[in-house]
Image (cartoon, rainbow, N blue to C red; front, top):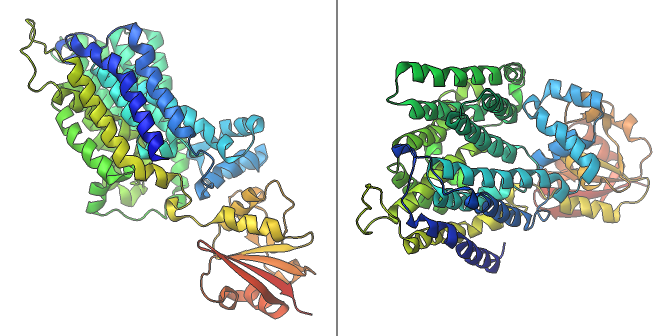
Length: 531
């Protein structure tokens, strides 16, 4: 992402933000005074549409430049490489929590293909929806300027930019979590059975999108409580009863998934136990930049003072999931920054509220009804400054998330491209030391005649897993192949000499090394049969 692109985008953002922020010259209303927030339907298209447009533009920049990494390869495999029967078998062993995502990705790839941009486009659409819904949620909780600013800050965060261009379900989780919160508030505004049904369906969507995101229900409980505080007991019961019923109904379809996911907990054993400092590092990981996290953290602290109940609910949205996953890590192993990405909207809402609240300092006396009037110039200046700081400090993060260095991943694309260029018909290929190599090369070589996978015994699709079983009798499987492209992650001066077991002995006995090419964390060796 170039500096000129960021500067141009920031300039356009300021120009478009100005009219809506200027509208804040009228008295500010909010939940604290009982007046429904927002400035009318005429701003809905801007408050929702402009953040979505900015998100769409940011996400499209370099959407196909970065190679797919190992988790995205899993999405591709589940979406394209297995039959329906094999797909069901796969989910019975692993990734049941991603079943809805993989299911519609199977339909998507059947229509739009499996290129990197095609695989990532659904995430970008989800993230654009999330930005739009966040603008509307900010308007409902605070006012239209706050909603617009929150949506724009969200759209230019490096980590949001990353997951908007990644073939994984985290953007979907963000969208349905924000949407469920907005549907709850709509049901509270005008309680109708139909609206509670929609909210119940949203709870189902949150749970099936990512189980950890269900922690947002604590924030929802506080929002309901905020709506009925000080009311008669009968009113409190009348409001809480449909909410509890909707939550119970919404959780019912999720319970079997929770049970099955518990049986598959072995798939996340790679997550290391957290340390106390990991809690302090979490905001930087959530925003994709430590500098951006520091800026948003301090203005979010100011946002806590804007109004009692929204701030309390947003604080629960932010804190409950990290605290629970940290304290229960030994049982569930779920404390990981990607799993907590759904807390970012609450951070951003508090930061936007705090930014515009600070703009009120030093202004003229309040209007007769006691509500302060926010000067348009101060509003625009505060919003523009916040956007400029996030864009400037986040620029390095945007560049990084568009590079192949993300996740310190192996150079799959470059290594596979080398094999594609030099392999001939009848050549073999073999993989060593890293179980994701076979799947990554299968993706990168999917449109080309592939070398023979000489040591493959049981393909992943038949194995009910993402990984294959290799031949127990390598000499028999090798056959009369005369040249092998040997792909290894055993970095060092002579990877073949350090290959253990019967496969290593067989290759050293029958082949000589014709050339060695090194890529990032991958060696590709051309092995030619001895004469």
